[in-house]
Image 1 (cartoon, helix red, strand yellow):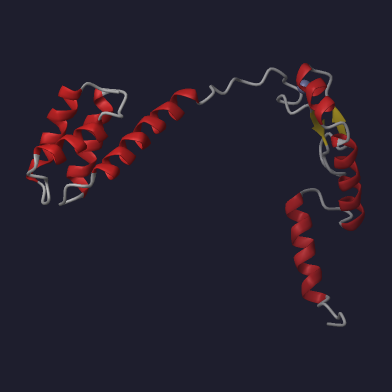
Image 2 (tube, rainbow, N blue to C red):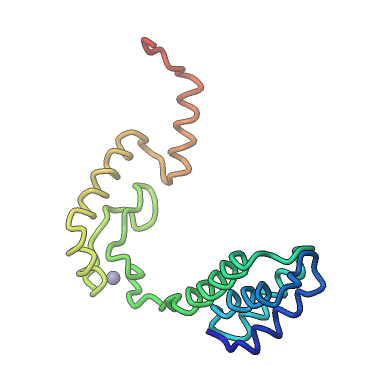
Length: 169
Ligand SMILES: [Zn+2]
């Protein structure tokens, strides 16, 4: 909560807008609504946003809602985790590496790494590498000679051109 005096000063900035209440009690409701801000800067920002975007003085509920939004937005921005750099040069902390297609450099199946990230990943998803290799083998069988996903997609597009679907439906 911010102090009443500051909230009052800020609310007074709205006095030039249409429908600004003439009644002191009604003005006080606006002041109370703005007081849910946690910092003076938030209250100023809310009032500035109103002045810049609205010809009319909003209802207390609107000011309260905007104030909560501002507080929440700043809180969320503060708890954003800082992305750390990956520790493992082999897998970039994904826990596995490889999977390059035949005909490319370092061709071979997916493999578990032996770093800490890999141990954690393997504990959570023990079948990950096996599943990835099954999918890889299916792709290789379906698109022999393709060296990238892009080439596979192109092959697929060409096949569909020359072999339109002749299904029963
Ligand atoms: Zn690793």
